Structure formats: structure tokens, C-alpha cells
Amino acid sequence: MYYSFLKGSDDVVACILNSNTNQSVIRLYDLQGKILFETKNISDKNISIDASKLSSGFYLLQFSGVGFNQTEKVVVR
Image (cartoon, rainbow, N blue to C red; front, side):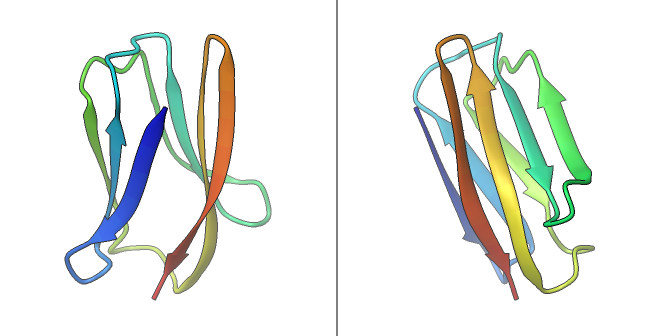
């Protein structure tokens, strides 16, 4: 399970995992399916994605691992 939110002035997408899941992958996609950010083998419960260079719009944030695969929409202003 995870939580994500924009913090600051929409410059950072913060991802908070409920547990250390070193077999997990977090990916940020644009709506054309291009991977803009990816981190694997996560050992930290808190992951920050720099959104300051992203254009305003919608993105997809995917969390996947053993037994789960969840995607949510992220809006960058």
C-alpha cells in the first residue's frame, strides 16, 4: 500500500510506502506512456520525485510489486 501527494508548490511528488518493499517499482508516466521517472528495489519508505521540470498537466503514477499493481493520476500545475 502507498500514499502519494504533491507538496510544496507542486515541485515534489511525495510517495510514502506503508512498508519497506524492496521488490517494488515506482514509475511516473506521461499520458503518452513515456516513463519520466523510475525507481526499483526501494529500500526507503519515503520517495520524492522532482516535478519542477514537468509541464502542467496529468501524469500517471504506478506502484507495483509482488502481489500488487496500482496506478493513480497526478496533476501538476
